[in-house]
Length: 481
Figure 1 (cartoon, rainbow, N blue to C red):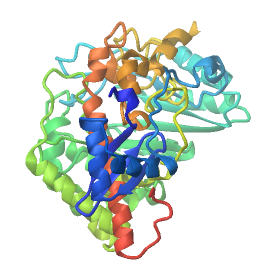
Figure 2: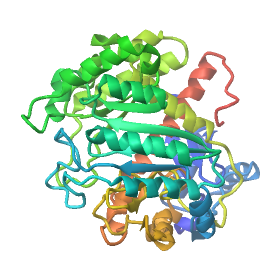
Figure 3: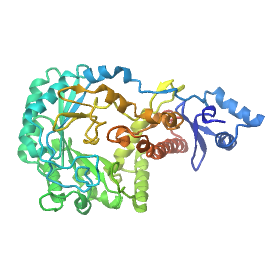
Figure 4: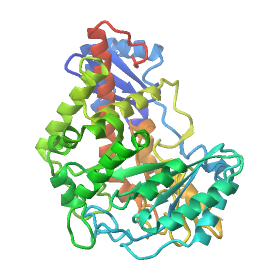
């Protein structure tokens, strides 16, 4: 029996019960041991079921499960509407006002010498005239967007604070009848009182990077001038903001890049030593991105064990069984992200004939990145030397053909995607298939197993929530049966 003639399902087990995930129904379905064994037999080795087994299958089919349907054509539904989206629905432009930085962070793609897909640090800076063109482009191509945002990125954007101020003042004058906001990502070492007063006056959201306590942070985030660690300067800045600008401190976002070579418990001790970070500021966290590195990062067993334990504490907190004081901000945020994903995880009837693996945003529509030369890229996280990622420029506008290629990244592995049980919950980004001049099937495929593991972890989390709620006799109406 070929894959296409088998039910499009994936088997799951918990310590308490057995289930399958039905791809077409987008549901987790409980089955007893006998039915689970029949499904396993059907999927793994044989379609020669005895009558009793066929009856068991028929019962599930009558309930709308076990459809064999796969998507016929891998194509993003927005493809035909790209011109409209890119000419009327932009929401943000991120301006690379400088390619220079006063730090040399060891994990930064701009610092890494083995990353051939990314530029190195340079002294290049964006001109004010070019920045104005970028702001104008956002305004002209956001007719259908009531709210727009101008972001500032580098390098370290505060190396050119005068340019930043000029751009903000210009944008405020130019963006008539628009809800305009600003955002800034900084390493936190150059912030002054003058800058804070300006940020507050113009309601500029601030994201500051700090990666853990002193030893952890300083192991990677070091000054260019003397190779000393930057922790003391950053934590003093954060403490000063908290004490002198307490209301604004609530708007400050902490960006923590986690290096798994360190103990996770030790990394998060930052919050025990600096309670104000936990009380006032919001944290986002991510593992170091080694997508384009030759030598990949290694997760220690201790790191994995500690992460699982902290997630367990987060789950207890989610159920109100553990006070907030025992759950650290990155863990609480991760649980919240899972909860948000659950809210979007809704049952369906069948896969459509035409679809694409979910994962790719519309390149440039939500986070258009303009580099110091005026080139357009989908966002600030992709490789600036990549030709396939250059989706236009400020003088010629968008290259819709390139945007379509990136949007339909699933098409380069169409047959594999059609038969993948994680099809509707794929998080693969075109960056992970970046072959510089074209998208690479081999590079993309290398991430597929990781995507399936992540989705399976999410499904197991859903199952755990269901079982715990049943154990405590709580409502499970919002969780898939």
